[in-house]
Each structure stands twice: as structure tokens, then as C-alpha cells.
Image (cartoon, rainbow, N blue to C red):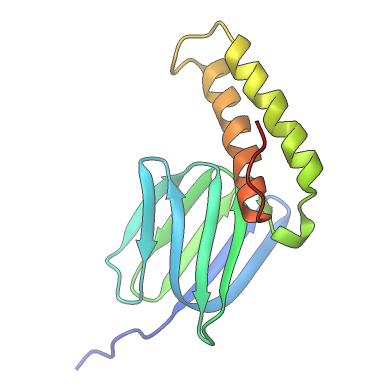
Length: 144
């Protein structure tokens, strides 16, 4: 008889090394096609991630969030492995800096003459999404 998984090993790595490694009850991630949730016992999945907010619940019932850059997630019944371009915990985010980045990215995207899907447009959208993710993870709503 197979033993059912009751928790997930969550690991987040960036080019700067391992950023997060802990046991969790659930994980929510910003996939390129929408939010995905992963619980123990999940079927194997491999998905592209866009900049957004990683959310998780730990075994002791606390919740956690972090800003997550583009990357990939691989998950199965017992593990969630994330490889991301960037990762920032709420306490490491300077809200004023993130707000300034959001304003700059919004203006850049607005003034961009690129066609939707072109490399310049994709990069500008990633910059905007990263700034929004940092603000949301830090607990602040963007000011327009």
C-alpha cells in the first residue's frame, strides 16, 4: 500500500543560490497561463512561471509570500522545485524603490512601439510584472 504525501518539500533556487527550503502544506505560483496551486499528492507537472507572488502555507499553519521572477516549476506528489530569475522576501523589498520601478516600467511599456509578443514588449511586460510582484509581496498596493 502506497503512503500518501502529507506535506511538500518546497525549494526555490535562483542564480544566486538556494533562497527557500522548507516543508509546506500548499503552494500557489504565478504560472505563465495563470495561477496554479499545488497540494500534497499532486500529479507531476512542469510549468513556466511569470513574475508574480509565490504563496505558501507551512506545516504549523503560518502563511508566507515572496516575489518571484520568471522561471520554471517542477512538482510532484511530495516536492515543488522552483528555479527563478529573481526572488525577494517581503522584508527585503524597498517599497519606494519597487514603486519607482513600477512607474518606470509602466511608462516604458506605454511608450514602447513594439508589437505584442516581440522581445522588447515581452521584456517590458516582465519588468512591469516584477515591480507589481515586489509591491504585492511587500504588502503594498501600487500607487498610480
